[in-house]
Image (cartoon, rainbow, N blue to C red; front, side, top):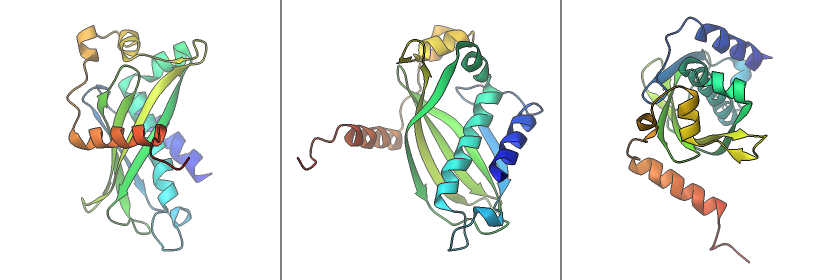
Length: 185
């Protein structure tokens, strides 16, 4: 039930928060570690990080206007890969924010960075997520060009910024997991 309340809060609060440019904007959503978020080590459960990341991406989609073409075209957001690096624990009742931004994209997928920052301004975790929009009626992933057109932007705005080295490593690891050529036969 707690995640439904958080989802409702994210959706409602996005109505009063400023719009984001999907290419350059950063979504910042604030939360607190509650007792039901804890594991046996008395810190935020590692699985809860991934669930909370969903809420950060929902805020990003709502505030950037990406929800309109998703709704109108019946596109489904699909996560294909996620990698997270835990750096510091988040303790009971500690406040934190999730910063979500678009880092790079290819023809049909995008890489988002999500960073957990404690109220003490310390990075608790950093994650990359590879995602795309899936058009069920076409049985194919939607191209970035089509998403840009649906947002009413120019084709020049579909150009991805240069891919940082850590994102290249993330994508390389994703490729190795998808096509294991060295594994046991």
